[in-house]
Amino acid sequence: MAGPKETVMYSQLQPWSTAGAPPCMEPVVGPPVPPRVGISYQTTQRHPWRPALAYEMMEVQNLPEQPVTNQMMQPCFVPDGMSTNPIIFPNLVTGFDRNPQHAARAALYTRYTGTEWINNNLSKYAEANINRHQSESLRNDAVRLMRETDEKVAQGQREAGRRIGERITDVTFWRNELNTELEKLVFESSAFTELKRKCAKAMLGLEAPLHIAQECLYHREGREGIEKVHDSVEKALLVEIENLRNSRDKLNELHGKITQQANDCRAAQHLLEEDVTFKESTLGIDSVCHQLNNYSRGITYYGGIEKYDPSISTQESWAEATSQRVSRSQAERAKLTQLRSDAETTVNGIASALWDYWSRTNNALDRRCQEMAESKNRIQNHLQKTQQELFDLEKFLFLLQKAIQDKSKPLQVAQTRLEARSHRQGLELCKDFAQLRLIREVQDIQGTVNQLHKKLQEAEAQHQSLLKTRSMLESDLKRKVNALFIDREKCMGLRRSFPVDTLIKY
Image (cartoon, rainbow, N blue to C red):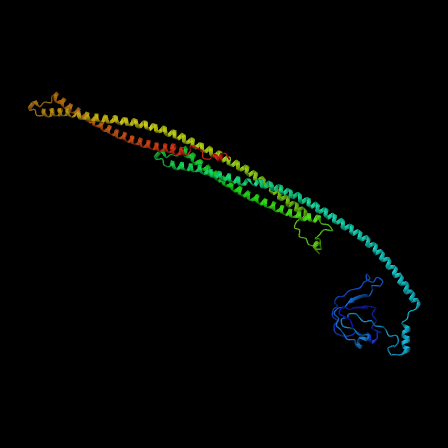
């Protein structure tokens, strides 16, 4: 009876033929055999003097206890838990029909001759020699193969290390190139803030002259009458305002270009930083891989890793991508430098044009003020003369009126004389020379009075004309004084100093 961990030895021999097998060789039909647990095989390493062919050791654990009965003594008894066939020995004493003669004859037929025995031994010797020679050749080939594989593996490992070292050199070179370009780009990009500040300051500096020019136009709208003329000052102010608006549009466009270029530079900087980060990580991984050897810690098997290809680029596309990023950064830096030069040129041109238009407007105002002052002086002179003429004419009117009044007495005398002489009687009512002279005197006096009245009317009409002229001159003088005050005091007062000195010093 076997215990829980009893070791049972079985020899697997050549199975008997089922044709001439005794009845006990029939297969035993029974319940299914459970699987073996804890099987251990004995090889030639433990028993080198035993052949390993058709021989094994197994350990059967947890076999159920079975009682010793007559069934275990039977040749065909198979205990539970065994998967091998039992050892069966032929019965050489009794035959199938239990006849001694038949049994002897059967035993005689199972014997071999001497020649067969010798030939069998010779074949075994030859087979042994052949197997030894084959084993020796196999060992020699295996030794050569081991040496070749060792050398091939070592050579492959050296070649892989050399390639990894070359890759580290390439990655380090491009990493340094990226870092150098990144430093240059960051340094150039630091000027964006100052450039945008100056552009915004220039835009803000245009507001003051634009406001002044518009306010000058607004003040000049306060001119009255004929003084509201589209003169050179107004033309210069309109041109100046148009130039200021165009300059503001140019600065707005320049500010937009600066903002767009800043975004492009930041995008190029992001690509450079991302590439540098990836290359730093790659350098760390490749450095670790370059230092690995057969005695390094952490090496292990990764089955099928050589079939996994996560790469998304080749050597050429990798270098081309990095070169393109560096080229893009260089192009963005060149654009930034050109933009800075264009911005400086644009702002300086705007400042120069603004100063020119400012000077032209001021010169036009000066000339207009001089013309206005000269015209005012002439008006004042004419007004003074007109006033003097009015004074003289008024005195003349008084003299005319007095002369008319002075003619009333002689006329009365002459008419009284005629009336008195009209009372003569008879032939004394004669049309003598005295009568004729009195009549002619009355007619002369009346003609003189009529002439004086006509001249008085003309003098009064001229007086009214002089009054109208004086009023017109006074109004014109008032308008000119107002226009001169607007141009000289209000407009020139606003334009005495140039308000954008910082723009010129850009």
